[in-house]
Image (cartoon, rainbow, N blue to C red; front, side):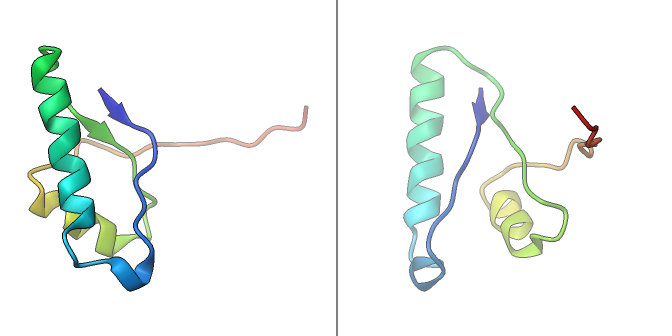
Length: 70
């Protein structure tokens, strides 16, 4: 299961809102027998990386993008 977007306004960060949202996602995933949660985070968002690691996520790899003229 992939979390597409998770953001908490800066003034409300470190208040438990993000952790509670992740916990709800985990509960839902368990009910649906989903065994893996995934989330992407921009490479420069080191605070977000620390948050996800604190929630039990581990770094699996990197995403790569290529912009082309359409």
